Length: 316
Image (cartoon, rainbow, N blue to C red; front, side):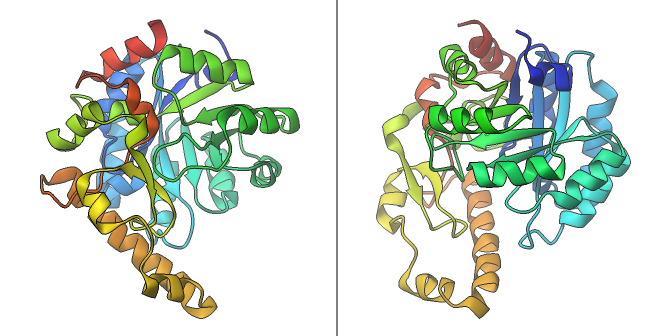
């Protein structure tokens, strides 16, 4: 299956294994590359720059001819590690960077100097045109079926709008759990897809068995939006604990977020607290769990190796 994405990354199938906070890892990306797709890891999954550097070197040492790997960068001020992460990635090299939650201008400029492609998360045409003008190589169109921080438009509407008004490739993110979903996104005008939630329940994922099993046991109707993780609406599995704590900001958070002077600091604090809560949910088995996932877990029927999940995506 040849598309502009397979040409850009020299991969066999137009699929990116999406970067997932605390879920994605080197083992998953190795299997992704060996199966002819691209794999991506959030740089924030590494506590130190040295750990990030070692991960890049390990992936470069095993990269096959038909696969590709990249890293996701949170490029706004809430990520104090951003500049160091960008520097390490550019020094060591990879195939692509996915930028999220901020202006990708610096990332594009630095990455292009060393031949790294940059794909940018967007949720609307306005930002898509901005990143295209800045020189992005492709657009990650985050729709309202995505897991985690999602957009507001349906896959069909968002892909249609962006593909009609932008000249760079559109990669659809959200709502893909089987091959028919991929075919649908390509028919809408996408050049590839970014798939995350189906890979949570993989053998290689370094999360608890409870998190993986939740992706098997729950389905599309069990996904809800919460403001309690990062301050920005995020999709999670509607477990009894989520039902207990609710999905809306507290009255204090709401008031502070309306204060122009304090808003930035509140967001940074909320982001830090939310990331720690997500880490605990992913790595510890307690009743106080908030598991991030998207509606595409509807198609997750068992905990499988990454290569088997990919095989189902491309052949069934």
